[in-house]
Length: 378
Image (cartoon, rainbow, N blue to C red; front, side, top):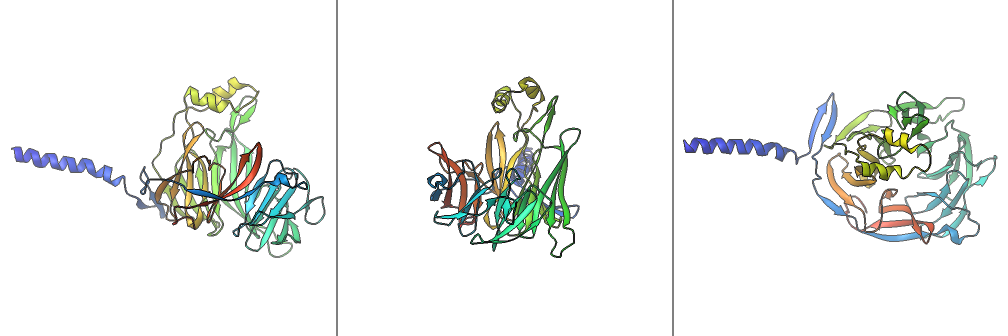
């Protein structure tokens, strides 16, 4: 009798342990012919704090001819940098040592020139520099010499290469905005139309409506987040209210879906007050009444080198952790940023990351080399 109870108890113990054990494994499951990567709640290799060393700092204010106050940047694979302003046409070139090389563009309406407030942006490709704004594309060689230009018919774009880009369109709907992410290939022959492929769309995103308009807060507003891997020409999409990342080719084919267990975190009164403090003026009572009871799940996604992916998972009001997935979509790490550095706006590259940081009440460009995690960073 005691032996029977013992055997029965052991069976129950084994059965009770098996689900917990399976939760530690990554499962690959085909659903409607598409591979879903079902990850455990915790990363396979645990938490890693990044070790970083600053390798370059560019302070544009030391040059009298540069008028930048606030700026964005692009970095070439060889370390060359362009600092630019999206609303006031200015783009300044620097080499990988931080030496100033001169301006890329001029204000105006002639060939290779741009006017202010035209969503001005700059991109590096393998062989060229691209500048866009006012629905125009200008091409330069790597030395900054103007080559040619053409109309592209879009304001806000992200170039994959010199002949194709991602654009986003939106229009109001009942609950917010209807947002579409579209891949556009420019025609090689004259008098032909660009080809357009809708990659992802969602309704009721991008804005929470209130009586006199609407508002957008990245911690509570439903939205689409996406990131483009230019080297493999794949794109990652996620609706930020769920932990389900769709990986697609630029032709629109679904390559896989990456999933991880996660529940949206409730927003308490302290967290709501913290988020509302960003809004100055206006009808704060109507904003507070419209604030959801829960935070969204994902703040952002970013491409890492060698096909890895970083997912900025929200853990509280203005708080997040960084989940890292390998090229197969398996959950490997939680990344902790280097001491004293925020990775919120960092752009990752083969050797580390770049960002704009504040120094002595000014903004400077900084580049960092990551000294650990060699499987991701060189």
